[in-house]
Image (cartoon, rainbow, N blue to C red):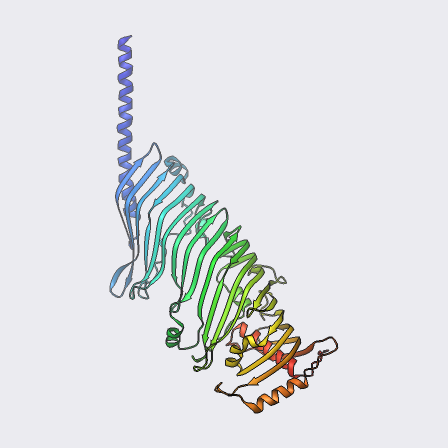
Length: 525
């Protein structure tokens, strides 16, 4: 009996030792083959190195440590790295080797990528590498990952020749649940499918052209709510520096947005394009300051209408409702170098935008309903709608000013119309209907004690003759109709080299002139 027990023990120990040694040998073999696989299958324009490899077949674990990847592109001086990636560690947990060998299916319970740092170089001499993958390879395995996590990542893109930073992301974490892909999915714009998403990004900088930059403190995505915190888009130069650098006029811009939130956010694919969706968005406390130096040469490029800009976006967008809460907008325009720039501003701006979309059916419309305080005293509201599918860019904009003291905009009138005015407009109602070439504006107005002073061309004195004639016309037409309003209307041709808001301003200006100086009667046509 004792002999039998000893024999059984020795047999068990032998089998265990054989298993341990066998497993160790298999793991060495797998590590060797994996290294060979990486060497053989790395494209010639790439270089992959790593310092550590750890394989545990029993646990389905693979870990690579201290990884570096370089992607090369050729220019006139030879090969140069266009991308450089370092990763502290890359780890797969719960990898089912047998599923891969027998079913050509990769199942992984968890992927952990620790401290990836990607550096990308942009250059006119470094063409983008074409993909070396065969998107039509039907033998590509189906891949399923329960949890995919990136921790403490960073990204920087630079222009090689100048050293200019184009994009800089200081830190980000990403978590994707239920990730899937296969040969068919890989052919899509979004080459994976996934479930829940968690994202945290901190300290983002983006170069957005020669004159503006974007800084963003934080982006977070959790429970389908995407939040941007402390966003700032602003000109890289002061107003004076920008004017010296410009060949044609361009706005100096400073846009600050404490928070943008998109609820039920989703990123999908529609008709071969990326599709950004949200049920409801909120922009809180935005402050926009614009300055234009009209002494710089005019920009004669055609300016698209907003409906056309939305229609021709390179991606699909569908935000059912967007709320703008407690915003502030100010605009300055310098027309005369010897006179201070004229200024207009709106505060307490609230707006609701419905159907901010380029995916809805013909006949539906994008609508904007807004209200604000104008120049700190008067009230203004605006209703505006357009159909993004209408190629003529037809629109209707209507609204009202109430308790509008004209003296408040004299700094703007002096520079832009060489006019000073005084008086009170208790009510101004307007409707502008038009398209991308022409518009009609109708106005009705209640006012009292209006008076104009017309300045000389240099803005330094009063043109007494024109002032007298203007006020004579004003007094002649000052009597309102029986309902207490004066009416006016105007037809305006659009200058395609001017913005949509310039188009609206010209319509309002022309309608205002006819309302004050015309017969004041309502057009019955």
